[in-house]
Length: 317
Ligand code: SER
Image (cartoon, rainbow, N blue to C red; front, side, top):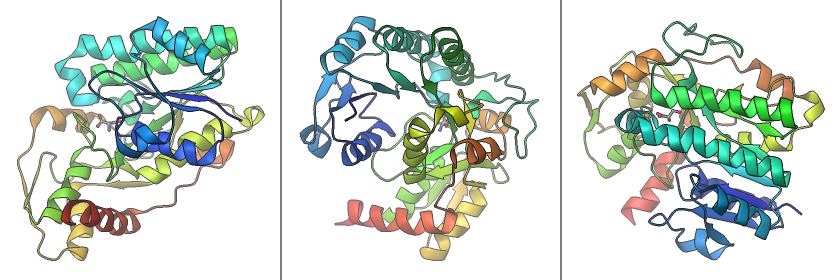
């Protein structure tokens, strides 16, 4: 029996993670949401949901107590480009919000998963095969909140014994709920254009490599890490994980192989390009592989086939 609270359950990760947790566990898998982002359809019908605004510590505490929650998946965040437009709000959600979650977890004995990101790295971090333990000096507010979150989560583990765990997600690619305001969003949008028969206008320049991952692997990583034997964990907040690294030309060619008429042009967005240039080309995920047997299942080819077939069903039926 597991009782889980997902904060941000209707977002890009939450909408799929909540369903996956409901498939796997018997207890209450509670979908936390903010007004205006209510769960709909199967997400709403398949289990309990509750208003939980991460900036409201009382709401978190009441939901955790009401459902006897043992694990919190804290998925509330603004993505990188939005965080640059609203840095104060990004801090309030990413750091003050996490502090609220950790305090409730300390008082009510919950484990906490909080995603970190490739965004914790900055311009003078090694770019290729970026090591697990290296310089974290981002110049974006998104990165600042994620580094702060890693430090705060490790502090709560060391000082109070709160079972905090985290992975550094790369750009996540999925067909269910679109991301919004991220730097890696182009790698999702490109599939929508291909299926709609439209030319894709790419905001990221050719030759810009970033790590990416298909959503089923990302969900698997979060759940597998939370189930991992704690005695094997040398690290906690946060693990590098990786499955594929590509630039816009490479993903374009992978899609064109399946959709021969597909076309792309470039119109680089300076903010997103600057952010992308400051991030690694690829991460070294050896520690995750050694400490909790992380292993991705999808590569660019298999992800592309799966994305296109699901999007055709979603958009063209
Ligand atoms: N997908 C995120 C972003 O682009 C990175 O973690 O902001």
